[in-house]
Image (tube, rainbow, N blue to C red):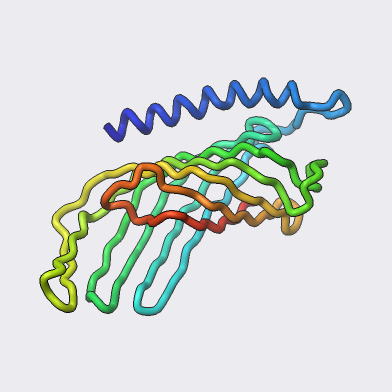
Length: 200
């Protein structure tokens, strides 16, 4: 099931590439030139890092390698690792796997000739396939007892929008508001999801 969905997302991504390339040509002004560049110039790296310490320790590392197919559409992939520790429950767990991402720029920022002053507004999608521990809570005890049974592979489809703001040169910062539409019982996310990323 997961493999079928992963392949479906991958197929849809490449169909989307073809469609956005056609849209790109239609909305392009006559004076604009198509984005040019070598393969290496169209590649950019980035991702997001999450850190939280206290009664709950949360560490997320999710780098990405992306390819800009057109001025508006890019897609990429990368690994995911999440570590969580709950002091009150004396419990810790790890999540690992990979993801495919795709972004389409709806409004360009001023650095790209657009009129939107805060940066580029994008539609964003991520499909994660991750390995998690099946976590259960025994509410009949106090404090509640958390235990795990085994590990399972799940997929999380995250959809939403974001704002990408240039910092200096090719370095950019991004903020996304995403929604986990799959709502898997063992998903590490709760909606809405606020994600902060950096790209170069």
